[in-house]
View 1 (tube, rainbow, N blue to C red):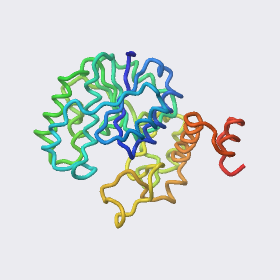
View 2 (view 1 turned 180 degrees about the vertical axis):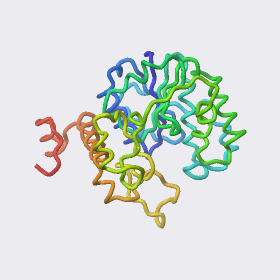
View 3 (view 1 turned 135 degrees about the horizontal axis):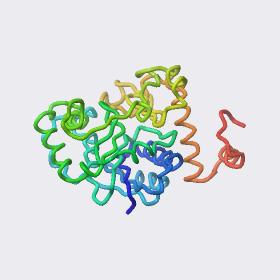
Length: 287
């Protein structure tokens, strides 16, 4: 067991994103060698687990410690019978670690962000109000906070589709009596455009300071093109505006990380991969 643990919930359709995120953390985080990885899940195939292990052979996979409260939640942002949003609660109950770091699976680490882990003095640190990046210090790491979050979800937010984020906001949001610190959006950067908030211009202006990119909403570089007449209207693992998204630098960066991960994890198996591997570069067109 190491000092810190990254908690990255996933599902079969987010396995590729999860693996690339873990790869990016291990590539850029200075204290990565002091960190374990755990992937909480409700629905994750064995093939998906094996794929994620290509990023970290020692990654742990855990079902929720208590999922009984799901029965009292009508639906979430992912629709009825999908309670993956509540897997974020698992990051608050990781025994034996000094700190737990929660990240959404649809993120990418592009620079070192060790400072927000090392600077945590036992409190909860996050980019309020979005739950994408959270550092949980020892004062709140354990069963007690986990149970409080479930109680809040059931008593105040069970009819709200974003119940996990609402619950964390209740305990650790603005005006909370608990011990909380906040960091800026460079550690949970969503304003990069592609049909969502911000713009590609905004991303390029701030690029040098961005530590973690968040591909929130229907802006998944790994996702299929969305069409509600064919696919589940609740599907978030997709691309709503493909032309815009593929012209965004944030998406190009994710694709480059994927190419790196693919070669390192599975080997250079095609002529282009062998060219990229031997020249230590990721090419933009057929060489």
